[in-house]
Length: 594
Image (cartoon, rainbow, N blue to C red):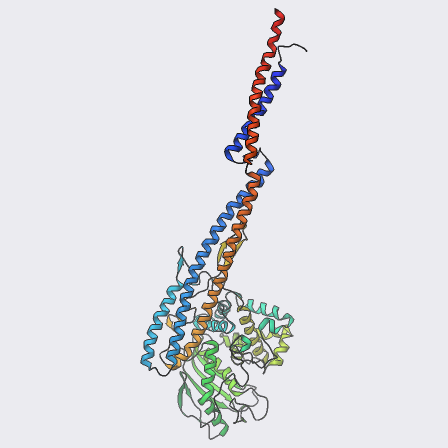
């Protein structure tokens, strides 16, 4: 071999190997000390990037689990408050039924009322329950809770009743409130209704079934009420209502009625006696059941004059006229057109004609008394800028909805369902003397609003972030559960009164409506609680699986690492020894000098 002293190639090669072994030993030491296979991007750039993304996801999932658990705690708090309200409403129903029983005196009822007043205050306290400083059930976390179809129309009328707004603003607000935000305003409701009716599906869009005996009244079976309401049963008479004609004035359900002179006319006497004996009271009870409007509270007017006219060519069966000042009704008159009802069958309690196919007079009275009660309770009902002239489809539709028109206007409803243009024209009509199209269109759109809103939840104003992406969230709405929203109070005054037998009976409708709303809110909360349970379970599983995947990439195999460390350590020591030997190779040249 060639003997050299300037470049010791054996030593250089050994030194390079020593550096590699030292680097390998350092890596093995780092793996063993950290427990990770990848400690920096230089170890494996691709795997490092994947691992870091997984670590980001793992930390996000941990926070999501915490978010979901906190959300569950919030919903548990809300559920407890609503449960308390439901329990109070059960007591309400019990006390109201007691007060409605005439074994009690009015003094007894006054004692019951004082208890109910305290319970109402507790309902308001329940609604102001907080979680982390947030008030949960005052409406700030949602809106109104659409209950069932009848309840939605009650909420609609309640908003109109309470609103001190222009007719247009009140109507827009009532639609938004009653539907729980499903429809923004009148125009939004009209647009959605016309789009839904493009294929003429009355049953699917509105819940209107023209092929059964139910009239479609909002309190009937078609609108998910308890009983089928037929043409004969919608105004429930008990025997024949006809008798001697009333005179002067008397009070019926809080309404002072002034009677006309029947001029010894048998038919006029029959009609006024039926109004006095049963029809007015039964019709007002039906309207109270349907909309919770009555003359027992604080309407702007509590008196009505009855008049009888003979105008067979007018096309109007009966009508209510009102006088107003500043948008507030000050007087009411109910006129029955004898030109159409001068031949009643006095053996029929419903006001059926002996010949012809005219609307039963008791149903006609229910329609007109709806106008009377709306006028007495709703500001800006009449007048040039009121509901009557600006939105006649609302006033007529609401009146038709009380007694139902699936039978009487069946052909008109079918025709409008098949002609979107005529339907729109009827909804857009303003002014006096609305046509039958307006009556039917108003009935249809109110049924549509109730049917659709009954399937909706309150506006969802709370967001629970339960995913690692922006759109992975649960949106929740908690409705207003205060006594005003439940219909138990109005403008700070208790509407659920049991101080008289009549008021106690009327309050049962209010309490049933409140119970329905509270129970729907409670079940809605329960559904979210169940979802959050599954959400936490799913997030925990995802966290486990992603952590396992990240471990596969990042965690060191300690057995292998110890083996590799031992190998690297032995090689390093061996290389060091060999380097010492290689450094001695050049010294052999000195032997040539001997």
